[in-house]
Amino acid sequence: MKRSSIPAIEIDNLSIHFGKEEALVKAVDQVSFFVPPQQSFGLVGESGSGKSTILRALMGLNPRCGGYMKLDGESLTDKRSKDFYKKVQMVFQDPFASLHPRHTIDKILSDPLAIYGLKNKEQRINKVMKQVSLPNKFRFRYPHQLSGGQRQRVAIARAIILEPKIMLLDEPTSALDVSIQAEILNLLNQLRQELSLTYLLVSHDLAVVSYMCEQVAVMQQGHLVEILKVDAQGMQPKSPYTKQLNIAAKGFDRKIIDQFMEEN
Figure 1 (cartoon, rainbow, N blue to C red):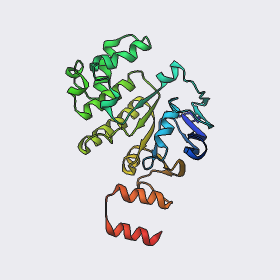
Figure 2: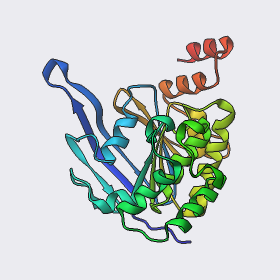
Figure 3: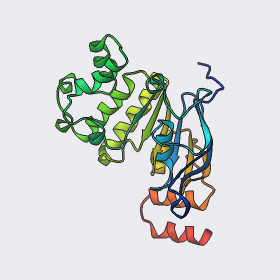
Figure 4: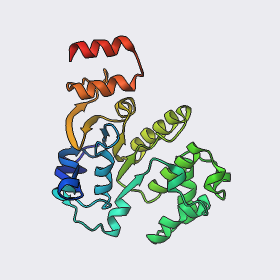
């Protein structure tokens, strides 16, 4: 399949500031990158680096103060249309917080269909339940009756039921047990291939983004440090900050830390 030369997502000199004067915080400061169609692009960095702020800005939840954002070549205005939210869906970090506790899984999946007037409700719900590997018996249960991994599968099902082109993933596995994280990541990889989706994935974990993404942008205190390509050998970080993140992802090792300090 020939891919379009127009980026699915384009960010150019994006700035997002909060507060004024002495209390001014530059959460995102002149960040630029683009994501080709049907690719997975990672934003990685420690807490407060601005990566999740960019996702919220794309969704229209954070106002920008500079730069522009485009989807499929079209500039995004401050207000998002109804069609935008059908085309772009988001999966949040905590599936328990993002699912209505008093709604059954059936209602959670039915609501987006009702909002957009989509027919064939039974067929669509059964289809997405299969796509995320959830047994049909869970359909009339409540979120608290499911495990964390099952809840995140519901959140993913809710996102894909509208057949979007772009998925924004905000730390989609960090709230899950380690044993479940790989299952969700494999599911997301599978869905991207099957549904020709474009991903923008936020994580603090270089191991996750290197597994999921073709390119990774490293963020630090609102700035873009570097953009790395992921190949068979993984990533080859150049900046000391990215090297530190890479070491942190591998856990504590005194020898590796001492070697890093000597080289930098």
